[in-house]
Length: 319
Image 1 (cartoon, rainbow, N blue to C red):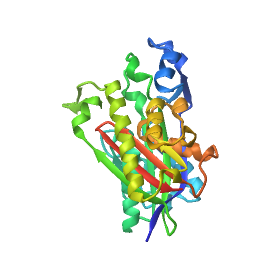
Image 2: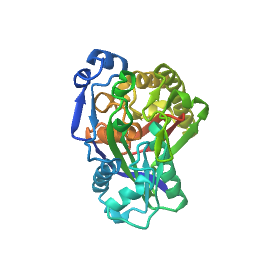
Image 3: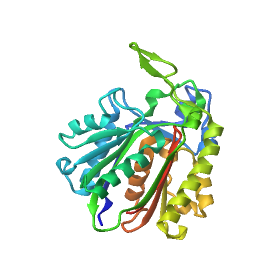
Image 4: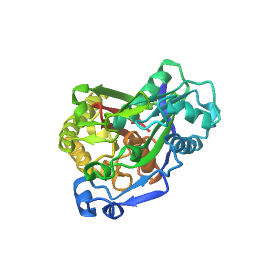
């Protein structure tokens, strides 16, 4: 049986690193207010000339280098993003062109902060079915472009960045199992309601969020889907070496770990440095954990995330 195994990882953060104190110069907030509620200290903001595809390409090249592969070795590209370069074509095709590739399937997945879970499981299915041998899976966002910088309840939470993994068909265990879920009844908790019509933007083009509602839903849902994936894999929680969660809020991450009975010593935490980078946050955290020397080959990882939709999911894998 073929498995989909991570062959390499990469990430990219824009050069502009913005602290809580920097934000406090522009909006009614403070480092203490942000840190105590979210754990966030810094975020990176894309330059005016940087597009989501540019961030994605930089992360992809690093993942390819890590895997020891060239772009032409890839036969599938899936990009998870809620902030595409344009209405269409898919950002994945723009990434494909910037990497000097042509021919292989390339498409976007839109599940916001859960996007990387959806993209990863999609690429896994392609490889398991034999429709692809090597896939480039990317989460990339320029969330700063859809923030109202006068709204302190949202603008302090997000940042820009990209993370990528190269998946390859392998006889060795890789992705063990995954579970995706969604419930559109909760769309009011987190959304950007704008749409284009008649050459105009109709509706609010900025993030709208019910913070307490998102927190309650995320805490309940993430622990449950993680427990289900672990149970279906037939392993014990104590066999998990690392949780690599969506980096939205430190308190949500702590609550999920507590529900699973796992110490925070087993959690890769980057929310303090990156803030919430939506679909990029899990692959960014994964690459950071590997490059820090925390995550080692052969270890068992639990990836989990939740985002607007509401959509959520978890993936269990052997790195």
